[in-house]
Length: 78
Image (cartoon, rainbow, N blue to C red; front, side, top):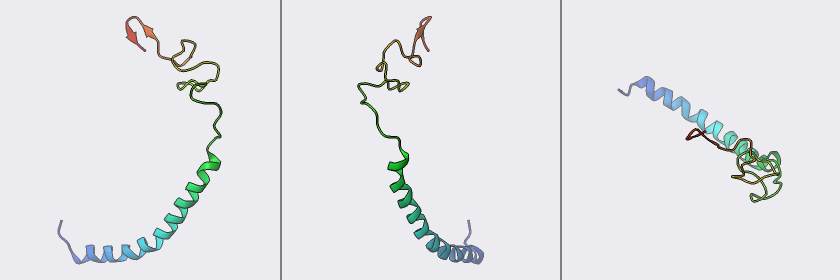
């Protein structure tokens, strides 16, 4: 790619726009980071009392009662 006068002028016009948008993006990022704790659901139980596959509290992971658990059918894992 050859560097022409048009490319240099486009870059020169983009720099002030980038400098103007950067503080807004930083502020937006900080606001989203502070809101994450409020939006995220509160934990209930521990990993030992919940199924990691379906999230149910009535059985643990690798329990055959899990409706979403992997099953072996005709020699294939499904």
